[in-house]
Length: 444
Image (cartoon, rainbow, N blue to C red; front, side):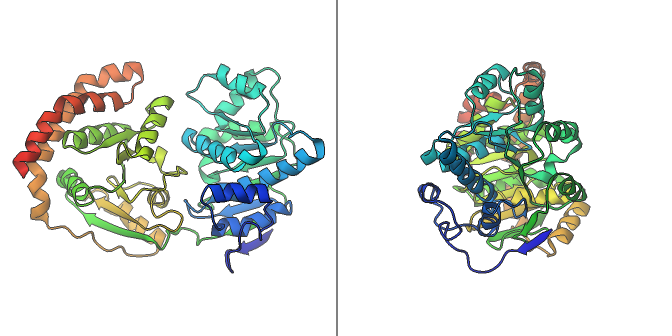
């Protein structure tokens, strides 16, 4: 296996060998110069080599595999006078990431009329079958739903696939996906190009690499577990009973910023969103318990700026390109320290600066120590005077009490309907807007 470490001067897309049509598409997306992983990966990919790309989250991985695939598709189109259907398959661990990859393929391939289909759970299979009937060039899928189509959609086959991409490969190798992945690898041709991209190189990733890549070039554009230099990371040791108060204090200090708050459970996303909305903040939850439409709706509202605080579980820590996030707050410290890298990678993307603050209570200290060991540095403390923080205590306690009450009222009803809490956030916010405003004025 050839190994290539990131280094040297970054060239333009044209100098990397990318065709004019795709250079123009990059330009229209605001990609003036290749990112490090793109500059390192694209020349090898254009030479027809398999790739293993290890890069920080937010480093431009999608462009690194999409551009060579689109260029190869363009060349095939010139030879056959028609772009071949089912040319490339991209596997993603989450629905949102799959949708985002598909959008990027279509944006980059707009000048060569590329069509892509997204196959993910939570969406009607018949609609997806109709899309497959239109014979798209690119399929972006989560493994489970792709296997469903291979079993149930008449006439659908992956025998013409020329490229396979495993994005966020470390996460695709969870036990949840293991059988589906085996089925997919058995259903696609052995003669193909394979690109494996991952933020971390685990034993499982190494095993997969041996199983399905041929003499790959390994491109490492970052140290094994690292965060970008433009990210300012801080922690604050807080008593568990005052954690909500510290969160509201930070939200107040960073008012006007776009923030993502990470929690451990789906219930916590709903509770915190209700509490913050009750205090007058524009917060919205997103978690794996929500329906696909609701998750996409929440994401759209966050991206558009309608809500500037996204309360989420780790479902949102991977691959979601939300370029304007200013602050990431770890309300709950992740039990798996590698998840910290992915969470804080939501900010300080593509050369921008950002802030990550971790609230550590007395029960989470061991997990936090593991994070510092992983990233190889001691983080500075977030400055806050406790007496100033506790000025929020009365309002926060009342807002939380009302939120817990509301969740008890709607909890059983929501679970029966498979709901997500977003609607109750909206209704609750409307009902309590007056209370929030009164409290704000009293505070002033």
